[in-house]
Length: 187
Image 1 (cartoon, rainbow, N blue to C red):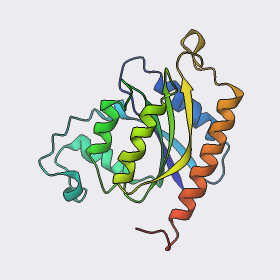
Image 2 (cartoon, one colour; image 1 turned 120 degrees about the horizontal axis):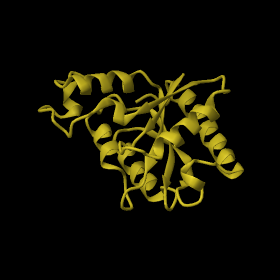
Image 3 (cartoon, one colour; image 1 turned 60 degrees about the horizontal axis):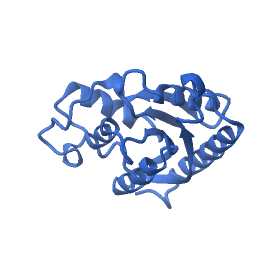
Image 4 (spheres, rainbow, N blue to C red; image 1 turned 90 degrees about the vertical axis):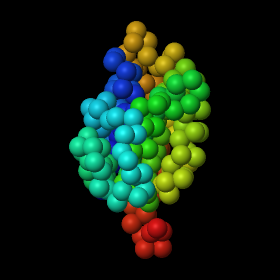
């Protein structure tokens, strides 16, 4: 099973890259899945510039960058969204990266590692409604990284509690992802 850790901020100097690297390092010793980091910033996606809506495009996108993103996302069985909270909601770059595709997300699993002044909890709550619309299966639990307390001196220093939370969320995601392959749960 392959799981992508999607870093959803594109800002220069983004803290999300540190969070994504921490999630990947924490997942390295897991045998039941491989985890890889995907940075939305690396794909240079345009803002909804396809004439055909993603749900009707059948993975046939006009923009080469959208095609590259589609191929990358489609190759994974599940996802960890490293979700920044911007103005009490999701980041525009990550929402756009989600919105330019559709079938690539459907029926897959997702877990959330939110980050922000309140641990990204409001962004994650918004993501739950968004991914449900794409028929994704979300873990119940999440990880909340606080940018005010978990980044002393600008560097991520996760507490033991965060590490325990992440282990639980990854356990839940792996279990959920393995069950989604079951004919009883297929969409």
